[in-house]
Image 1 (cartoon, rainbow, N blue to C red):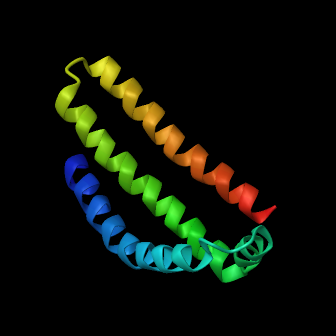
Image 2 (image 1 turned 90 degrees about the vertical axis):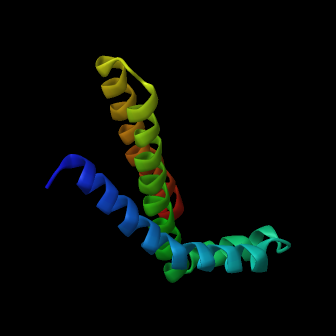
Length: 106
């Protein structure tokens, strides 16, 4: 399978997975928006909320990294610069969600 085909396939799969996670996040964000700090901590202390929010972060960053990578492919002419930009993008798409999830579970 071609690399572009794999990217396209991962982009479509992650977008389908993000739809119910985004609906869940919006509904819960609206419900905790005006709550106190302790109620918000209580929400994120729930194991189901932690798990779903972690999935939301991972797939959200994967989706955005794949989209930004396509922008790099289209607009950066120099291959070395394009490769460095893509590697930094993918590295940040791994590190930022992992760091956030670790803080959430501590």
